[in-house]
Length: 73
Image 1 (cartoon, rainbow, N blue to C red):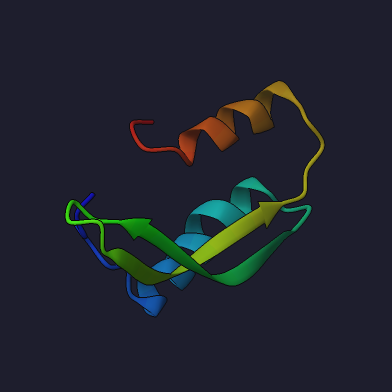
Image 2 (image 1 turned 90 degrees about the vertical axis):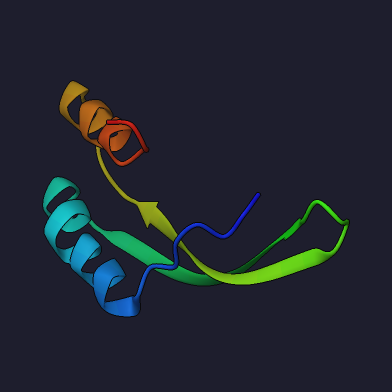
């Protein structure tokens, strides 16, 4: 795994405000997290990351919206 792109705080907040929040108006919670993985040499690489917890009633519309948050939508 290589570090391809680091998202700025402003870009992440814009994504939350303009993409996620309108699709899930019932609410969401953002957690600051710490991730890690082993690189090809076996070295542990640590990275700051974010996790989003969404609150919604499951419908066909939210099923479609939630799948659109994944890469390739």
